[in-house]
Amino acid sequence: MLVHTSGRPSVMRYNPDQLFEDKGLPEDLIQKGKDIKGVSEIVHEGKKVKLTITYGPKVLHNEFTLGEECELETMSGEKVKAVVTMEGDNKMVTSFKGMKSVTELNGDTITNTMTLGDIVYKRVSKRI
Image 1 (spheres, rainbow, N blue to C red):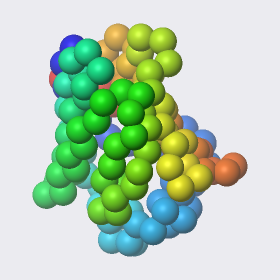
Image 2 (spheres, helix red, strand yellow):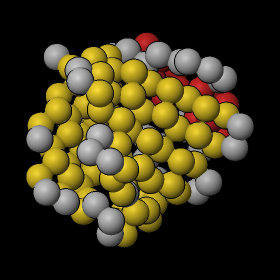
Image 3 (tube, rainbow, N blue to C red):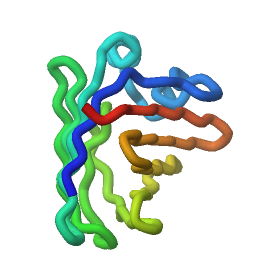
């Protein structure tokens, strides 16, 4: 499955700035994230997943095998160990450093929800 999406982050509840500050993202990256349209590409073949997220000049590339421990690069550039799993046919779920990330594909929409304690950030992207 190949999913190619583009969209401006859409905050549904709470303050995303607090989430990113708590995870160590510098203020300039937080502001750029608000201003730049991002493009995500997900290539899913069996249990292998390649995820590329481009925000302006920053490109984040992660490859992993579902259900196996891997090293992921975060938006702050930090490398973390995590296990990404599938829930059903359309949700990828992972947790690291106290944060849970759920990426869900429904038709032409990808919703990524990140939760850290009681702080929730939601980004909605549309397929191009």
